[in-house]
Length: 111
Image 1 (cartoon, one colour):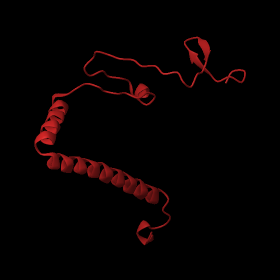
Image 2: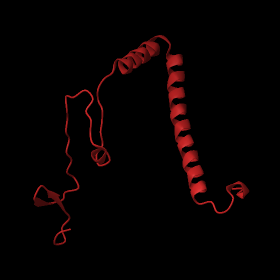
Image 3: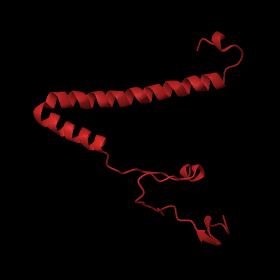
Image 4: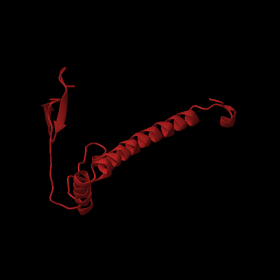
């Protein structure tokens, strides 16, 4: 804050910060390398279409046309897989929390 106004330093100049400002950068590099300190400050999105991704989309369209029931089952399995991964993450986080906050012998804790 400078004089009660939220500011950022850009080069040698202090600028007023606008929370609605967004900066989008693109590159034609196939596999760009960014420094770790930059990667933790920004969101990197990769919109490159891969052969595998396109094949999966084409297969999904073909199966949906030929075997709609099979495609619905595939979509259900994908949704269940995502839910299971989220549940696993929650369980892992709970285990780590319990290990971090355990006092004494963790085998004696019946929680």
